[in-house]
Image (tube, rainbow, N blue to C red; front, side, top):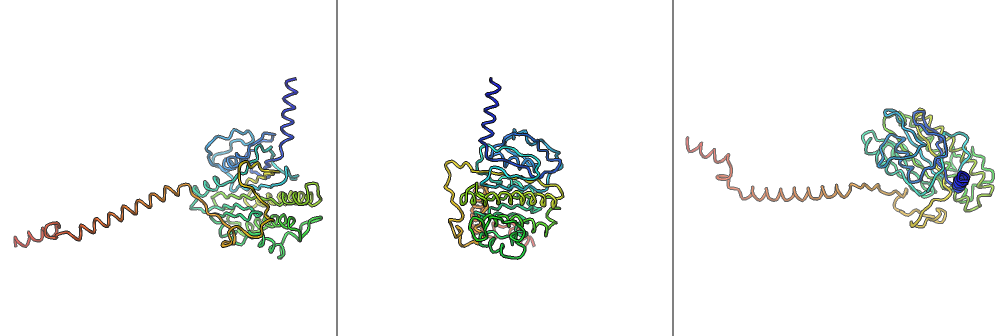
Length: 351
């Protein structure tokens, strides 16, 4: 009886899970164990850091990832967060794990570690959320992805140009004129452009510094709100995105010489208690910062206060030292205060 109750509890908990972490691509030396071991959403950044060979503040007691070789680490880590769907029918994947406590997370700590350890090598760090028009680039990404469309207006203009995904995708029930459909197609276009830019700059995948990519897609979430999750538009978009992500992962895995980890996190709804209320990007026609075309936010460094105080007080001390030295030099008597004049006077007297 106790065993049956335990199995029922486990089965009910698995039925309630509507978020998953799927390892799409991984090299052989990054060992992911197949199983239904759940991982908390707040532990995703630690998992990404461990796959790249970085240390974390707290040990990750999760059996899904085994310790790998110390001197062999992947050249890149690509994390794609898909909102509005519990899982995707990805044709091929390494492993999949239930996601517990799907709270919003960022890879800022991992990006800071990459920038600190490999500052001289200028690694590629790209964090992008097209629906929120949010972009953060670091290192060589500033030169490689400077032409990457970021705002919805730029991406929609890109859809009408040559080489857009509209010519190759089976749109089926999706429309080229509806706002929600265009948002989804814009995100697919961004994935295509990132792959195309990396293929044009293949030298980035051959350097010694690891690269980090973090992408957040919410087009499916918007389609679910507009048409419903049982609609043909939502079903067609889900199938399109699954195929696009599979090809996206394979292309990046090949560009980095089979030395990249590609993860896909599918979240139906983020648990956001006691935080600001979010709104749809389709409700707003302008970005929050009209002065900047990319709506970029500055990267805050937690050592800013320390550096500011060091520079401030050092400048004050140097200014006071200059004032004191200048005052003493101005009021100095060369005949008595200077040893040079004193010796010269004695030499003159002896002569």
